[in-house]
Image 1: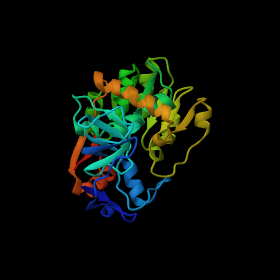
Image 2: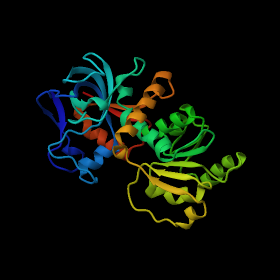
Image 3: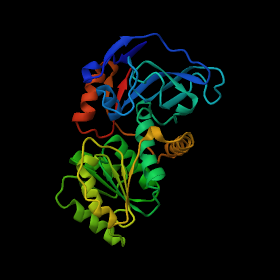
Image 4: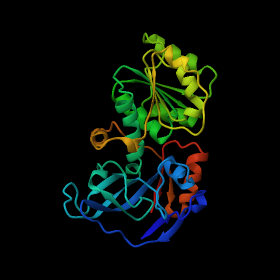
Length: 323
């Protein structure tokens, strides 16, 4: 089978297309023929060698994917060969024609969801759900500000928050992104670079008798966290999903709000939390509350370009590889 391999940490050029033996499923494992693989920022950090948990080299990146069950190991009961599935984790990497996963990492893919969309579920929707409901403990009728709402995680958060009955404010950096955020369910969409962003957000929350958002989902804390703390409403919660550098803050801004800053990392969710996440997402996909957005598609050999684009370009949705 063809697969991307990384033999040494470094830039996107370290992603090399190679021929590897097809994996064989052991007990409790499932071999999936990958039709589409999702690209996530975390994979670029790991490739660079700049992430807390590093893979053992040589390494095939990828946790997200969708395809058809090719074969199953002993003891597997939930799926059978020929089933359409999406992956939320892989032991051999999804940047490949075939990928091995455990039974708990493989989930049914509804017929109306394409393989490309299926590759956009695992990390983006899992992260959005965990941030909103397991970390922030969001409630219907609360106001949520999603900073960076036009990316894969941001759009997932917009859809899930709107379906849950929250008042959704999303930010993006261009008209195309703002339009996409509104199309996917945000009540309001603002440019995150606008000088009057805090004033506009404040006006919306004041109408609802609040002093600021109840929840802020932050995709780029090094740029926005200090401003988030100033905008946050009383007893509000900020969940940091993404960060790319240091930030200087004034802790009094949180003291005055009796607020909380919460970090999150999807891999640290417990097995029971992950089961809850993907059970809820399965229902959301079936009824149309979750509808993954694919921004761009690449051939497997162009994985290095996808890694460049996910960091250097605005991604209005998910980037996927097609083996």
